[in-house]
Length: 376
Image: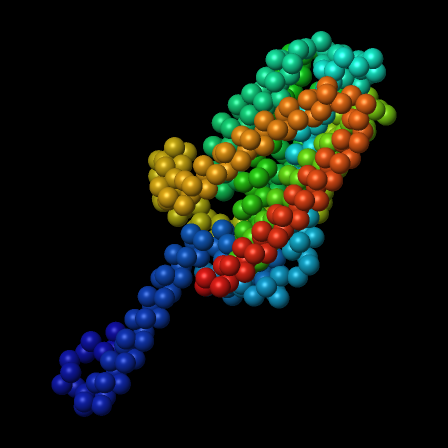
């Protein structure tokens, strides 16, 4: 404020000095206001969420977010306490949902029995299997996915991860003791609902915990759960041969329970859950003012307004449609066409899906990080 005094009280040099100081003061105040807004709106998203770079008390008091994008600051701890637990949970997610494809057998082989084939035990047809494997899971999964991301933004993502894993594990165990086709359908629908809430929580946790320079690599490690879970699902044929379809699902469900415990005991606490009550209150107040009456549909429109996002959405839609068709009918067809080679198919398919899928995913993550580095 000093430079606004009448100019006649100062010499020319003094006026210049005072003006410079005044401008600097204004810039400092402007930066402070901007930092305050950034701290409130973005601190719980990604600015201060590095595992190895926790903001100090002074940072919180001044509402200036602490950031670090230096890859060297993020050590192996971030991968052990964030990426690895989330990967194991994602493997359970994929294994639980995909195991059904390998536990049915529609062949005319004399070796097919109620012990190893779910369809024989419960008495359902190929058409009913198609409904069970696809629509029963994907219908509620697709609807729930519209709300899962918004829910992950507003809730404790570690609790959300553990809770959803507990629900789909319970659904898997419920399927293992089902006595009718209708009971399996109910368990499948519940599984679809639960599985939808894991991925949004996981990707945003990784985003908030890993520097942008390594984000694609970390995401590719987590995305490897699709292929590792698919590989284990293929190997479920081996479990089926030794334990029966009910025993195989029981083992898969128990693995899910272990993942729930890992989520609670090992997974790092959600970085957006802050102990400082003043900062939490300010975040809540600002969020309520900014959110207004924004709906999920409006959020979706805002996201899809970007052409690049629309193309990515279309590509993902096409990729998963084709992948679902192959996954649902690939194994039943092979077991029907080559009933004596089911074991060989299980191992070879697991090798292809697991090794090739994970390798290509990680390579894509590394190249994406490099491309982003070059672009920046």
